[in-house]
Length: 390
Image 1 (cartoon, rainbow, N blue to C red):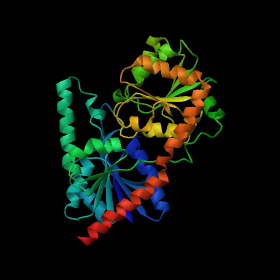
Image 2: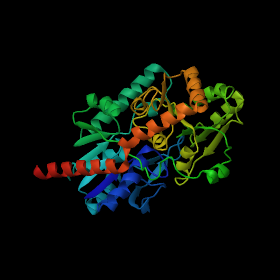
Image 3: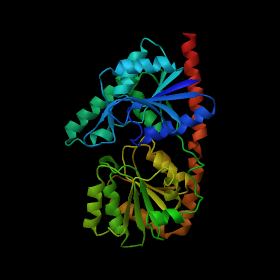
Image 4: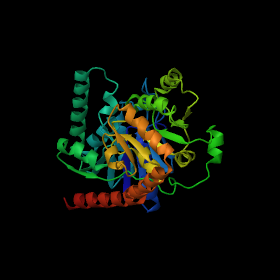
């Protein structure tokens, strides 16, 4: 098969969409398929280059003021460029990852080409509406975003999303079939085994129990709530909170650690290269996440594969990943005292830690990247066969 992935966010903007494509794409290539990607370029000109051994057609773009790593494609000649790429690559199937400018243009161009399109939804309005102030205005923005999403995704053959939680969220908004398929992770990279001494030395991490957060430092991730819990928990038990990632709130979060008097208990690593990331999970005691807008949470699955107990807000897809008192704890949004209690329990109780560790490893087996790749191969072929019969 010749498979064309389409996304309005891609490297160097590191997010769930990028990780999905850059993980599944090479595996599909190893299985004999041809892969190409259309995405914004990292510059204000077009390019074609290899990224993660995939052919990426970068469309000229400009950066977003508040989020400079996010690129918006330049509208001039956008459809014409996309038409040329599609005709030259001649895909058997197109797989879009969002409903924004490039994906919209692909759907418009494809109305005359009639190539089957699969769409995956990684989107929740809260990822954007968190920046809006005022309840009524926030509701209007979310309604508009859902309406735009439905308009675009109702024009494809089938929609996937990483979890049943996500599928149930969008099924009432769509006329097409919605199927839950995990984004998957590599158990070769994420597992409990490996020496972490060099990573500890490189990032100045002391030989203490580690509470870990991995992800963007943006408003919807609510890392400030975790810091408030950490400030209380460190008075009861000695540990360090390691924050892996970058984002618009990094400076304000660093300032908050000073205000809370825990600057010596918190380590901000900033951006971490792919080759280092698995070792942060391996060296940690527990993983924590406060984001209420997660359709899968790849970082949570990576933590599970690495054998970490989880502490997560009771929201979105996190309730599928965290089984209460089995592989971790769920807490109600904003419940700092419960977060504190769970942090102290997991870090101080070895028996509880090992029990939850084994359950995380057991539950994560559903998210093997090879299983995910096989599921998409089957889905692609089904849609190609249906198109052939028409």
